[in-house]
Structure formats: C-alpha cells, structure tokens
Image (cartoon, rainbow over all chains, first blue to last red; front, top):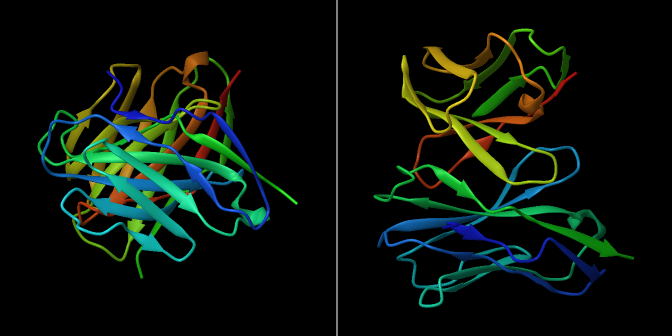
Length: 117
Length: 111
C-alpha cells in the first residue's frame, strides 16, 4: 500500500489566489512527521514546512500552512496569495519513527502546480 | 553554516560504463546521509542510507552501490550502468530527525 498519496498530478491557480495541494498518508506508527518540499525546474528540493504527529497546532511558514487532520490522515498544503515563482512540483513526505521505513523519508509522487498570470 | 555539495550536476554515460557520484556535507558531524533517485516526472525513491562511516543500508536491490569512506562523504557507484539507471540523483543529509537537506542533484542520462 502507498504510504503517501497525492491525488492531483497537476493543478492550476490564478496569481494571488490561494491553492490547496492534497496529501493523505498511511501509517500505524503513533509518532511520525510530515513534510512538504518544493522542486522547481532546476531540480533542487526546497523544504517548505513540517508537521509533527503530536503537534497541537497546524504548522505555518509565511505563505505556507499545513492543514493537518490527523483522524483523516491528511496533511494538505495551503499556499496563500500564489506567486508566479510558486510554479513547481510539490512533494509530500512522511517519516515514521518506529515504522517499516526505519525513520527514512518516504515521498509521494508529487503535484505539479502552475500559477497563471 | 551547514552545506551539502553534490557533483557533477549533469552526466551522460554510455551503457556498461562505470559511475561515481560524490556528495559531501560541511558544517555538521555524524549526519545521516541518503541517496534518492527520481525518474522523469515521478517521486523520489530512497536508494541507500548511512548512519555512520562504513554503514550502508540498501533499500532497493539493483546494480548500484554506495560507500561512506568518511563521516561527511557519501558516494554512489556502479560498475556497469544500465539504461534504467537514468534519472535525477539527489543526496540528502539529516542530523535532527525532523530535518532533511538536499543537494542540488545530478541528472544522469545513460545512452
């Protein structure tokens, strides 16, 4: 079974609007971390935001926020006020502390976001 | 400051030739080191990770190997490349379990 599922292969958003990128995960580990990375066309992986499974509040980093719904096992990324530079691939990832992935980062297949002017 | 260096940035190699990709980190000690591969238009697949010098764990059986001769050096190798080895290879490190930093990647094309 897939550990990380990103159901949106591609998304379009108008500049200055908000967009939500979906991510669901599968784990039986009570302790885990969820990450979002941005990959522009240059290929580098840029860390955006992190949410721990025991964190009480949703993580926020500038224009990025993580809508963490633990019971639904979802960790959607919300980008507010989209900019042209936000056009990129976005990857959701999970790290289990005790699970089968041995603490390593497991990635989803990604969502390609295109921001329209 | 902590940095990670990965080279070369691009590489074109014939089938059957050897491969050596190098990754080094600076500004940290005893990091966990990782090699990931990304096929065109797809997510990242963990290939190898290392928690210390000489300690290598393989996630996917293949004709690639990894070595860690020094604390801050991680090398990905192959004796004979296959067409299917083409992809984007990323090195990463972590010290705290909640932080992974990636190198700039190597785009490998096997022809």
